Structure formats: C-alpha cells, structure tokens
Image (cartoon, rainbow, N blue to C red; front, side):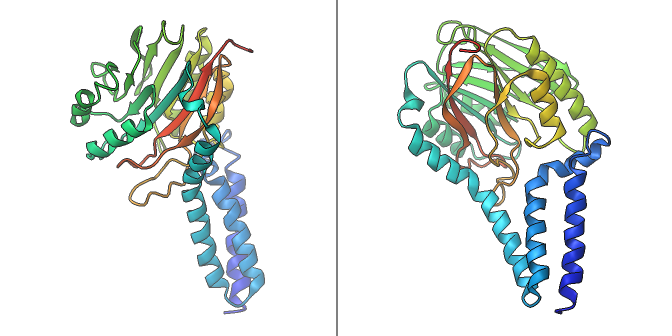
Length: 314
C-alpha cells in the first residue's frame, strides 16, 4: 500500500492539474468551461493528493478526510459569511433610502410554501425576485400581499417563471424576450428609487452551454443599453470563474456582488457553487454585503443585499 500511494496520488494529482488547466480553455472549446466552475475544488484536491502521496502510510485516510473538509468548508462558507455580514452591517439594512433586495430560485420541485413564506417574512426585503415560480406556488402571492402589495408576473410569456414582489409601488413592468428561453422581467420604480430598473433573470445551464453563452451575450448587450440605474439579479447558472460569467460582466459593464456558494442546497444544505448573483450599475453602492440566507426548501439558497442609490460615478 505504501508503494501504491505515490503512484495513485501522483496520477490523481496529474488529473487535477489537467482539469484545472482545462477550465481556462473554454473560450477555445466551450465544453471545457464546465471545469472552471470547480476551479477551487480541483485546486484544493490537488493539494490533498500531494500531501497524501508524500505521507505514505495513511494516505487513504488523508484523501477521505481531505475530501470531507473541502466539501464541508465550501458548504458552510455561505452561512459563516451571512453571520459575519449581519454583525458588521448594523443598521445599514434598515436605513432609510436603502434598498434591501432578495433573489431566490424557489425550485420547481419545492412544494414547501410555508418555508418560502417564513424565509421571506424573516428576511423582510424591500424587493423580492423569484425564479421557477410556477402555478403551484401562486397561493403565496395572496399570502404575502400584506407585505408585498405590488407584484409583477410574466405568466403570459412562454417559458417565463419569474415573479418580482415589492413593498413599494412599481411604476411599470415588462417582459423582454432577449433570446429563446431567456425572458427578462423588468420592473421600474419612479417614486421610491427614481429611475431604478431591476431585471429578474434565469438563464439556461449546462449541458446547453452554447445557447447559454448566446443568452449571456444578449443579456450583456441589454444591460449595456440601459441608461438608468440597473440591477440584474437571479439564477445565472454560472460561477464567477466561468466564461459565461465573464462574458456577461465584461459586456454589461455591471459590477458583480455575490460569490458565495448557493447550489446545491438539497438534499444536504451544504452548497458548493456560486450560481445566483446580483449585478449592479455604478449608480448603486453596497450598504450591506451580498450573502446567501438559510435554506427554504429549494436546491438554491436565497441571496440578499442592501444597496444605496446614488449617481453614476458618485
């Protein structure tokens, strides 16, 4: 077993190096971009295999413990981030004029409406964006009307499962279909936050990577054209290290705010990948950092942020 250790660990280390490098090559062959999502997992696993190979005896235990620690560390990180942010933010989340925003992929398989309602009431956000909000969750709209009397839906648009709820009046809303299977629900505020636009999105995911990249390009072009203060939020199905994410960030000119893991939160609520995001224009400043919240029956964690609306560059 001692002789086997350096051989197997060396092979595993070499595979990790290959996969880690492959994650940077998605712009030349798109399927390789899938490995970019796991960049840090692969990097840490390579370190574990290197240590295991050098140890000789007990290398299997080192690998098993290393895997467990990597999985647990990523899974617990969003909860730690939220705890630290809550302590640091103080009264920022409730300061007058700030915008507390929550985004949540409620998940097509999530039938626990009570958990969703409890989470939203506890979070007490000003504006809520939900994705995969289908007809079976419609009763929530009436149950939440005391908290969110202003509601924008896109049921009449094929493939649109988004809903945006607000405690303040929505001046107007529209659904814009940018690409096949990419309807964007846009709401605009005039009184509470003058000129603010919030786009609620849900992109495709792997293995539909070519179409997802087209969606990211179209979404970036859409965002770049908007002249008002803008927030684009929702389920991007891409991590901050991926070509998809970079395509949107560079093309839109918007600033990303959220990088903590949010998925998968089911069946074990220890998410590994950051695929739910907020992007904002220069008109908006962060008053309280963007972090995930606790689970609410979905395979995604909700994410929340508090922003201050100012002027571009100010």
